[in-house]
Image (cartoon, rainbow, N blue to C red; front, side):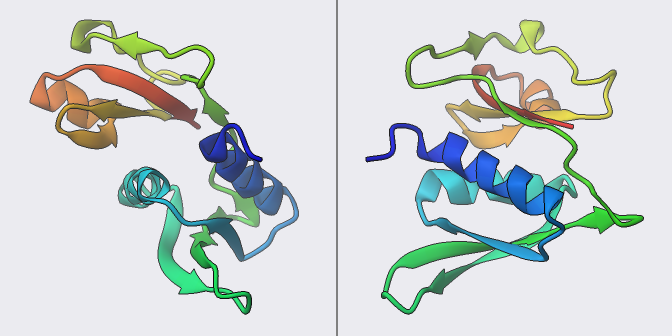
Length: 131
């Protein structure tokens, strides 16, 4: 039994990047799809699509992005965990590496990046930081 499927997805992405894999498969869920949509929009991955394995399981196939032979995602850290949820008001949302990274938030208006949350003036649960 997996206690934190989102952290498992982040570990798979980081490990695949270190091994220079072009694609990585993770078990599918709506929350993961929303997080990946934000990562794709911000340019951290090339894209993702829903696929089915030979065992008839639904997976998300993530196309990783590289620049100069190195993975674009240097750090992908889970912030809010099942054991300790972390929420932030819009005025308290900080920047990641002086604006070179992003935070992914789950808000009342959906999953979005920190810049989008500031623009819409909403706070929420900080899911992860990406750099």
